[in-house]
Image (cartoon, rainbow, N blue to C red; front, side, top):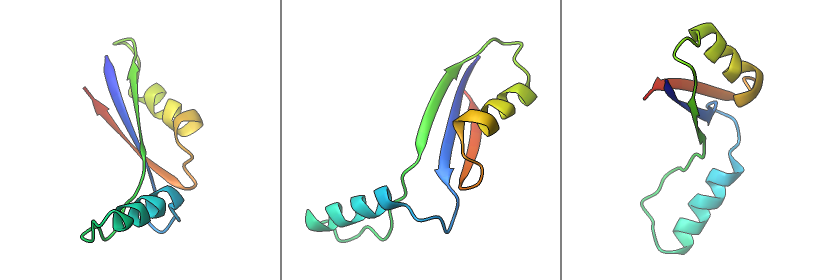
Length: 76
C-alpha cells in the first residue's frame, strides 16, 4: 500500500524557511505572496496488512514532531 504523509508546522510556529521564501520571492519582484509555509512530503510503500495504528505510530514516533508539527496521511 502506498502512503503519502504530509507534515506541516502547526499554526503559530515560526517557519524560517517559509520566511526566506517570502523574502526571496519579493526580491525577485513577486509581490502577491502574503505568506509561505514549508512542509515535507514522505512517501512510504508499506505492506497491505499494516494497521492504521502502526501507520499512526510511525508518524508520531519518527516522521513528525507532534509538539510543533501536524501530519496527514493519504493513501495513494
